[in-house]
Image (cartoon, rainbow, N blue to C red; front, side):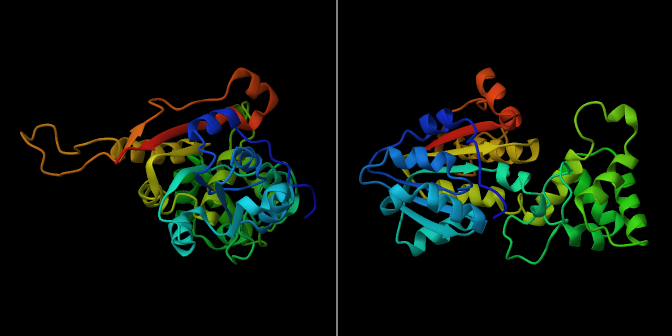
Length: 312
């Protein structure tokens, strides 16, 4: 690793309170990162156990070092959190007391130029969270058609200039392949009128979109959340931190559906769907960072925390 895996945990106290930790319980951190949340969870465990998942080997290596005093209580698994149910089944764990998901990208990943996540540093176009996968940002930028690129940038970045950016990318790569973050940055900046470049970097939305595409961040997210709810004990909590509206909308909609007894059209005289709520909402509205945290950790600006508790 080129630098220390430094990661300030976002909304730490809200997440710990949300998990309502039982010292003898089994907990899953589905997105271990730098173990900022995990170390505080594991400190509260006596005979309990933490299952720590991450698909980034750098994160696992750094976290094993950070959690070395607690290794008897932690099981590390290199995998995507969407494979959580399979992991728990293989470990012989039928149900858990709590699950935490931090759906953001880690500070380490952003701040390591050669990982290619950031438009602030020049580095190879990579953006892979799991560095063993072959598909990277280079492939998206250099092989997708104008239509494919435009769709990715518009859907995942909510970027109004998506088509202009996509056309310019395809035009530029006919001259030579686009290989670095700064090459991509220059293309994006050239496509967005100056009056739209007043508030933050004009690259943010496109970089986010390509990163989501590379890592399949929204693929199977809804299905995975439902599977996790199925793995909670009654009284168990699921805490999810999101950082952009696309993820938050999925989490919000799943939590609403799973906390509702009947999903039938209200015009029907009786329920025919036989849907029963499996959770209750602990947060009617998402929790957001305090002013104090915002001052200390700018990454918490867009964070939203939603919490449910298994009831049946």
